[in-house]
Length: 340
Image (tube, rainbow, N blue to C red):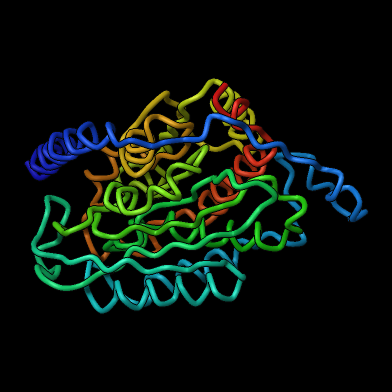
């Protein structure tokens, strides 16, 4: 009976969310048609010990360790359930800002968002009124074309939203790469109000406020709900459902998935923040996804008590590494190549 109820909640969530996404997919993103050229000779001239132009490869001397990634995840949940506009939510956003400053992210900006009630994903104990913040910043590259790395910052437990931890650690890695070897500029974006009714809802609300970023964006990356373990299957991790909207992204995703032996299905489209970016951007190349939603919601994704004991540490790290490789690969592609 409980599972049937949760199933109905999940379906209701889809029916509530999808019309909103369809409505905002008509947003005018006045993307520049010309393609910026990238001259890699400045990167080659550095004569580095690691070939950053070998796209898809990761310099493990600079990349996060499994323990460091886990420590950041522990930091996130140490604040408690990060219901939108709660004290825990504010503390996590403060920490995100601190880390972004430490890694040299530029133009760090907070957008104030007014919460005026619950939505279908809100926990009963979540605030019905208050203030929350979108937060984002820029990591410059050699071109003005932007790859957006973004998932919502608010969430009620260790699973939702642990994608923010992954993108934070990946962004720190990217910040250590010489700017001459970064083709694209990266926007690190943490929207709020996934879990509340507000004046600026999640990625849609952020995108509407920032056409200057959306118009320059050439691709989006959004992993969510990673490595959630299913109590009903002997603690096995729930397979990840990856959304990759181009043939090229699906091809490289399959290659890296098989290389890392990750339990992952690959789809042309999906929901969640990745689906939101795809639609609100006017269907620009997007890759992201989440653990298979129905078993995840059946196994308590809404429960604030879901802790680290429900996260498979090895899968969490491997999936972070997977997305780092995908982002490195994407950084080597031109705008037209990203669309293929």
